Length: 254
Ligand code: GLN
Image (cartoon, rainbow, N blue to C red):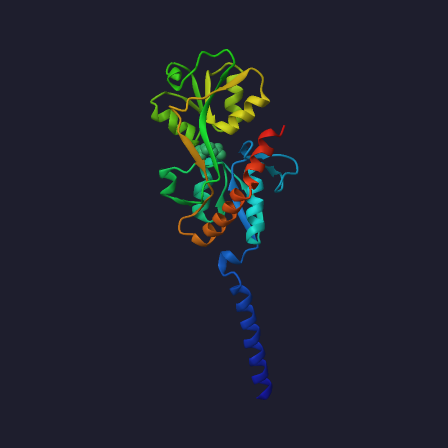
């Protein structure tokens, strides 16, 4: 009888230990990793490389993701997928957060929650060096290319122009370089990177037609615990200059 009692006590103690171990995090929060969804086709924010900041990925966002991981005591991992799938992956719980140079829009806010913004960009036009396009209105009778699902697509759509959409920025720029289209509408920093990497193309800005866009990290709607942690981390990086340093570093990188 005594023996049984002892075993019972030991059993309960073991069960309690187990519960307290699991209780440490509780469900998803118990995980030692934080998975960021991205679309690594958006230099200088995220791109595939050999041996990047996290695995084979590098860029401003990847470096930010790594620092957020450090700040919240978890290892950051990257799940690279199509841009259009990112918010669905977040809702499905396939990723914990999305960091993808993603512009905060009212439409996206309906399905996910956004962190404090960490970068301000705008849409710009990439054209051939000898192009006569000087304003957004000049695109009216031109062959326009955008990237599928990017805010650039919505902007051109709202202007009422017809366009062709590609899955990757590199494909769109190649189309322009090869003379198969007249203009690519895409985010400013990414455009700078493409113009730097390709001969014979330039950027045309039109601030009266393209509004400022703010990039932020998305989390599943209602995940305030993670959102607060991310916000604290981003705010710290904005205040201590980390984000401006990272932007300068990756914008200047070859
Ligand atoms: N900022 C644009 C958007 O949110 C493009 C982002 C991206 O391609 N990574 O749609």
